[in-house]
Amino acid sequence: MQYRTGPLQHTPTVVKNLVIINAIVFGVKLISDGRFLGLDMDEALGLHYVGSPAFKPWQLVTHMFMHGSLGHIFMNMFGLFMLGSPLEYHWGSKRFLNFYLLCGLGGALLNTGVQAWEFNQLAQGMTAAEIDQVKEQGRLAMMSLWNGGSGFGDSAMNQMSAILYTPMVGASGAIFGILAAFGILYPNVELMIIFFPVPIKAKWFVLLYGAYEFYAGYAGLMGTGSDNVAHFAHIGGGIMGVALALLWRRKLSPW
Image (cartoon, rainbow, N blue to C red; front, side):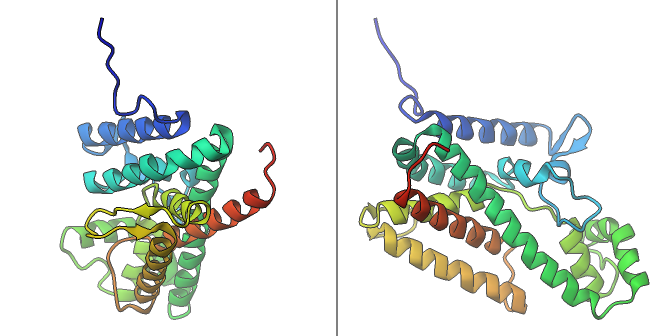
């Protein structure tokens, strides 16, 4: 008799189920070309700015299970599988699931706060009528821009449309929280990172990656860089991950 084991056979329960759920959701999105039961999945499940007409409360959770590309989901699930497993073994499944969701929520909240600041900065230079026009017609303007058009023909109105109608997708906030916590709990473990030729201790990798995220996020705010990545969601997830790891390291209690 032969026994076969799969790649997730010895993976802890929550990590394994999160990988499976994310893979299923991405598979459905891929097969259905982004539309399931008549719904645009990114539009319905991705996280919109809280002041957007497209915002729904459930998006605070569902955006963590949506991904934009094969590379996007691969990197996130690879990080979850490699770094999340030791954390789940260390904390237990219930605490790790709470940690994962809270880090994802922390990323969403910081990103929303930054969007609120950007929205208010733009609104100061616009009339109430222009703001209402963006809220009513911003989705069409974004479709025009995505198809090579000019949108509203006004950069401030187009930027406000992007804030209101571009959904954030991905588990990156939660994954960055996992990375940050791993650096707290296992600072001297050497990591071999894809595209990085030498091993690096976890604590240094977290610091370097965090510094890059701050730089890239700041550059995006100042208009000197734009890579379509929600850097502040990564930072928010990392901050939450550090806070929880430090709190639970001092006081471990059922949660």
